Length: 590
Image 1 (spheres, rainbow, N blue to C red):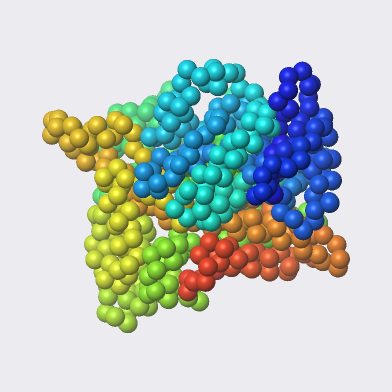
Image 2: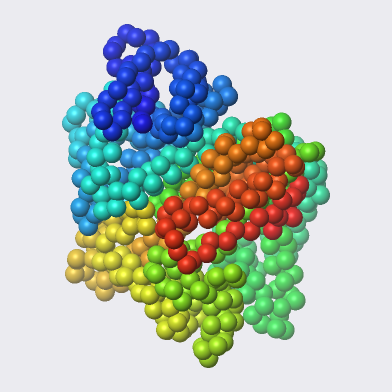
């Protein structure tokens, strides 16, 4: 059952909201109430329907969830029209899907951004004109952003459900939309509850690495000492070490034949000539040390602490489906990357515990199940998948007889590496796992022609831009042809990886959704669990709760991985193992 929530369509009703019930048999009841009573309304309806799935439907979870969570209400499920529309618009843009979808409103543009959130993602390449053509000249396109009425949202929901029904795999696409919407709830809860973060420990780390907190815009003392040493080594007394361009010019002016300040290239240059190695490292060592401290200072320094940590909690802001593949992004605070330097600050309080889990080699396992390659599936059963490939290679006399070679080859197959070591190993990998490699090559060939691919559940890759197609068709100069070929190869690599990375993102979403469901429904000694999901990074999650719940949380995390696999793929030979660690210190979890 869907209950659509939004402002009342009738003018002059103040801050009134309306709930419109939609079921498979058609529209049901309508109810009007003050928006301030929204949490009470949801609490009452879910209390009266404890065993019924209610999909609370609204324009944008980011607009609604803060009010609900502040009132202590967190719905079991929802349908986020904004996120669903993103998926359906791109899916309908692929003629191969033979899918009919005409949005009744552009939710992304017509709904105001929540306070404190960065501007919405721009339309994906090849997608920019979809709404422009459809809405050009209409009153809808000219309106200032405002929350659409419940009646308008109900019409969009009807259009979305009809689109799903015309898709190649309706049940899969429906599961994807449900998972994406659950992701919106999870992201809102993570931001609301926060991640344990011990400010005192973090400040000690900063003081140890950087020195005392500087005043104003001064550099920390240890960075300033390195800056002075760099200037002395390069004979550049006024050098700004924070400017890569200035550093490169100073290096070249000092007679050093470098073309970049990237870490790996400086390291390679320093080691290139044995008898000059020590002299070159005299220059490179302080540069690399400065770069490391500068990253710490700018990304997770005192200003970061002031902005993002309060009451010993880090409140990350996530953007669900930020990338075309469905991977999440962050609105700020570095939620998608917590450096090793500061992980000791992620510390459980007394009586509490962190449960940290990550899925092992999820993308190659996704490749195995999507391709139906039984040999690749067996390589990862009960063991490290790359090691399994190496053991098969050793038995069959293949050059893929050790783990490093197996990993390089398989990652190269998924990411489109055609040269170097990965390219040399590809024929051997193709011989061992023909079905898996055939799947990636079909996706790559489609991308080369400008075609689109879809994940297992139906998220579709965006089409290249009109400029891309024009470049492929034009007969220009040799340089133009090389540029067109380079663009085609880049698109080929994108589609090759899209269906694997995108399906892995779907698996992770459903894994989290199952964990969330279990945390809400499980009981320990008759009482609800207090543990909560507090962190997510692609294939890693973190729960935080009482020490006494750790064993049950570990069980939930493992079983939810199995449930996610079966929900997406049904019964399969491919295993999706997860590593689970319980600890009071995040830095010891890996």
